Image 1 (cartoon, helix red, strand yellow):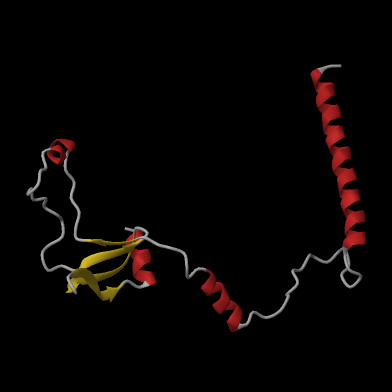
Image 2 (cartoon, rainbow, N blue to C red):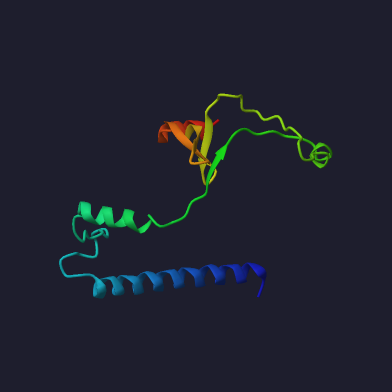
Length: 143
């Protein structure tokens, strides 16, 4: 047999296999489909009921205990490793943030709000002054 004969046989074998599969699927569909739906109709997903507001509330409750990382960022800077290794106690690192500017509040690395530092009972905190809307977050991601 030549290579061309092998390809023709292969094509014939594929054609026969596809025809056999189509016939098998048609028989299977006729057996498995309910009598109300004919095999010529497209498959339609059944609705199992209307979702109540209570179900949506239950879904939200499932994620309430998932921990997230909240970071408050004063500013950022870039420096070569040489300068980083020269830092010692008392060194000052210049940040991009200006004094008096709002601090960024990030949740899992995404900016969600801005605020200002407060001290309550000798502990630092942040008073949120601006919540970033979902549309604003999308706009910032596209920059």
